[in-house]
Structures are given as C-alpha cells and as structure tokens.
Image 1 (tube, rainbow, N blue to C red):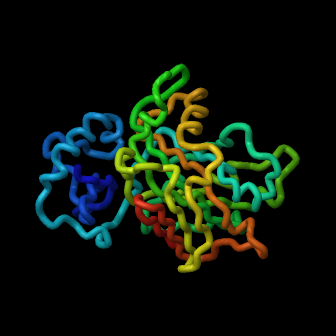
Image 2 (image 1 turned 45 degrees about the vertical axis):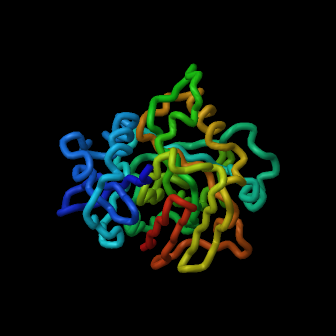
Length: 292
C-alpha cells in the first residue's frame, strides 16, 4: 500500500489540493481526474470515499511531480467549522506552568479560523501583546461526524494528523484579572496557529501516542518530547469533546504541548521579529514560520 499525505498549495496561482507521494507533490486532479474534489474541505467531507479512491490509484502515479520546496503552501484546510485546542495536556508542561493538580478532563478552548497560517507564511507579532510564545502540538483532523450518543470507536472518526504551532500571548497569564485568564486575548490573534503543511492519513500513523515532537527557534532546540507524554490520549480527547458537541469532517483539534515553552523558562523567553520557528513531528513532517 502506497502512503501519501494531503496539503494545499498554489499551482499556477490557484489554490490546489495536493497529494505528497514519495517526496513529490501532485495535484489531486492528476490522480483522481474528474472525481477529484476541489478542496480538502470536500475531501474530508467525503473522507471514506476519497481515501478509498486514493488508495486505489496512488500506487499507479507516474511522473516527477513537484518539489515541495518550490511550493507556496496554503493552510491545508482554509475554513474548518471548528478549531479546538487542548491545554495543559503534557505532564512536564504542567510542572513548568506551575499547575499543581492534573486536570480531571481535557482542558479545552476554541479559536477562530483566522488564527490559521500556512507553512512558510510570515506570522505577524501583534502590537497589543509582548509575551508571544511557541507551542509544538500534534493536530487531529476529523473525518466523520462524532457527537453525543455516538457509540463507535472515537478513533474511527480521525481522518489524519498534522503539525501545529499553537502560538500564545502569555501577557494574560502573567497579569490575569480576578475573573481568570482571557483566552481570547491569549489565543485568538490572526495567524496564531500555523498548521501543516501536510495531513497524514491516520492509517499511516501506527501509534499517534508515540511520536517524537520537537520545536526549534532559530535552530536552537526548545522543546523535545514524545506524544506519549500526553495526559489525555486521542480517544479520551475525542470522547470528551464529542460528549458536548458534534465534531464534523475537517474540524482541527490541537492536542497540547510538552515542556519547553518560553513562559516556563528561567529567564523567560519570547518570540521577536525575525525569529524562525520549526516544529517537527515524527512521520508527519516539519512546519516552519518566521515571525515578523
């Protein structure tokens, strides 16, 4: 069975779904012809059918394809219905953030789609925040509806996995008001969630809870861990969220970050204009962005 990944980039100036096969990118339409969906939103809306077609045809792809280093990437999914993030979900991160008691359930928040940024895209540092921080995270992409009362295996709802940098403005932790942390002010700035460049189908990820995860800033390692350090695994996160809301195809869920964030360092470190951040997850790829 030939493995593949999915992304979105500009081809002849047009947003185009891409399939990465053996290190080369091919327009989805070159593989599926008239049956090709026009966007990855459409791919995941009909995930079972499209994945079956790709499985059948990827092995027969010929031709050189595109060098990924020459592609101007877009976010793999441009307009997911939901972007959900899990906080304080790694044991070592709890310690560095001085959270004394582990959460009883996945601690979650939502952010707008305008937070998404593409691999290679410049991320503007907001003038209204000074303590801008990095967070390497494993991302989940949903492939079928999963909601309250669903008795199926929640892992069957996962279409694939991707790489995320969950950027945080820590100003509103350091000076939290009596009502608590303002998650909008911390998390909802434009382009504060670089994502991609590729989505790897779940069946090609043998164990998503045993993947090396690393983040560097200007080439210096800041985070180095394994997704096995998560407090709540993939199934537990999905079961918790789907007990409240219906997860839908194309939804993106960030699963938390390990130790090594700037806020937890002594002395603390934060992003500055010109910094280049790379997040690599074993088997999924590398996401890189420069902050400006």
